[in-house]
Length: 279
Image (cartoon, rainbow, N blue to C red; front, side, top):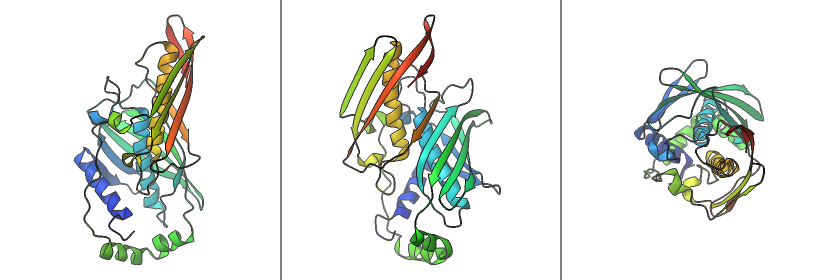
């Protein structure tokens, strides 16, 4: 926490960067609701139709709900994700580049070990875009509880005194496509509207969170990419839109390791159009 690569300065740099990219935390209400506003940039939309992938929205939910939890937790525990899920509101299409989104996150319940958060995503005019839920493991150990609970004033003083080394802002990838360059990709179809896909990626610096592990939102993006390839194969054309997703985290990946996402999609046909699809 005190060196030139300190956690606190990494966070500070990223929040400065968010503001310059059209987003930022704008309010923390008395009821514990944390508000984050975001203008969707073109670079996070990896489809040609400029839709925001649901996994990218989920990545933002991960960040905002985590800070909402920290903000009401006496021990200020960031925790680690157990599961994340999000779904577009009925009848909604995904946000597009240039849209103004408002994330409203709250901690619904917090215990010694687990925390449960929810988030609503709305347009700037208040229309519901999506809902999301986040479950976190909050047990950070006794030392954390002392340093960031009863001893937080001392910890804060040490950070201010020794953690003020200037650091450049983290490098932004030009687009999601340039960040995610698969080492291998396989797609195959089967009779009856079944598609299978695999993508393997090597974990690189731009995919890491502040503690050097593969960011949960990036993992969700890998799932969506593989599921999208399988779904396109199952129906025989592209342009499908993901309406809901759920990710359960079982282990963490580090820089240099390879991670592999595999997906199977099955289409239920109604006439000449796809009436249902699961990936």
